Amino acid sequence: MLEGKNVALGVCGSIAAYKSALLVRLLVKSGANVQVVMTPDATNFITPLTLSTLSKNPVYTDYFVAETGEWHNHVELGLWADVLVIAPASANTLAKMAVGLTDNLLTAVYLSAKCPVYFAPAMDLDMWKHPSTTANIDTLQSFGNILIAPGTGELASGLHGEGRMAEPEEIIAFLAADIKKKLPLVNIKALVTAGPTYEAIDPVRFIGNHSSGKMGFAIADELAMLGADVTLVSGPSAQVSKQRAVKRINVTTAAEMLEACQQNYTDAAVCVMSAAVADYTPLTVAPQKIKKQDDGLTIETKKTTDILKFLGDNKKEGQLLVGFALETNNEEQNAIEKLKKKNLDFIVLNSLSDAGAGFKTDTNKITIIDRQLQKTTFGLKSKEDVAKDICDKIRSLLKK
Ligand code: CTP
Image 1 (tube, rainbow, N blue to C red):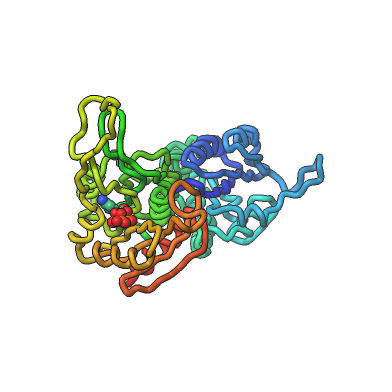
Image 2 (cartoon, helix red, strand yellow):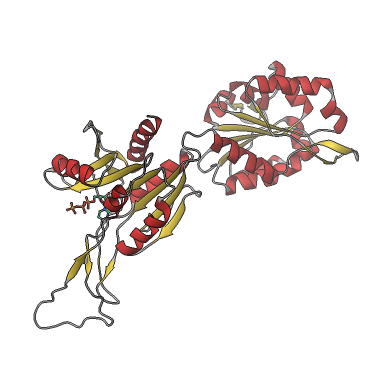
């Protein structure tokens, strides 16, 4: 959930600041881009050098860099952030946030941030219990800021009680779960196919095609970013999912792809079949390498099962089925025939006659045709943006 997210991490003056090092490391490991802002007091507990080394970014501690006269733009940082996490959040900073005081860069970033703000308090038992702390937290929550509650345990003062900052692992888990639960496709299972299939002729040769898998991987990533639980059945492809939550099943042949789809179809609310599945497979696979002969070679083939049609024939109420049509001629007519024959909710048509569309390219140009034969044509876009358009259509149909 944190892959590619811009996380501004605010660190306040608290003994728990030593945990910020691990928090930064875990955020980076989760795929987030991290920029740390420290209050001047925080630098007494952990050095900016430690956090800049771990975050691989400069750490900001003040409005101004005295040596260069440079100014750190808090508005820019606030706008850059997809989430602002203040951990540890000291009683002092919580109070400033509650009343809008901006006497340091972190509180100025807080006031400028338009993104969700999470705060993980860390303080001594009595400070935590003080009515002013409770009131400040209530105020922050009334602003929509999200509390990551402290735990109970031994405190720096030697006392035992509530006030310990949540552990970095807990903070990461909290952020991921909270971000996910607000996504539009949460609790929706999706099944996506991608890439080519290879049908063996003999131990060294196969019938395949030029599909790279880029479009299917982009769709799987986009669905996962929207919160869906995605299973991606991929033929041989060098692509890697950007979203770690995507469950990948590697297959080689059309028969293996069919089996994987059958196993994952039942509870999938959304199915997008973008693989370029071989329509034919050799009738038999030669056990040894076929030797060169004087005359030509004829390979007898049989039809593979049309996976998309199988899913369409077995579609249950509430399941949404999306197919692709890669055409070279009579594009729309062929696509509409496939839409009807395979019982699809919509079909994504791309034409090899469009420059920049189809196999291997990083771009695609599509037309979406739905059951009502409503047609939407898009311009040439990156496959990531095309995936967004396809997912917009999926979302609009899920709402109905
Ligand atoms: N498809 C499939 N299983 C197959 C063949 C195709 O699931 N054995 C799916 C593809 O993933 C795609 C859609 O069917 O979503 C259309 O694929 P395409 O190759 O364009 O069409 P075909 O139905 O194979 O027809 P033709 O090759 O004659 O155009």
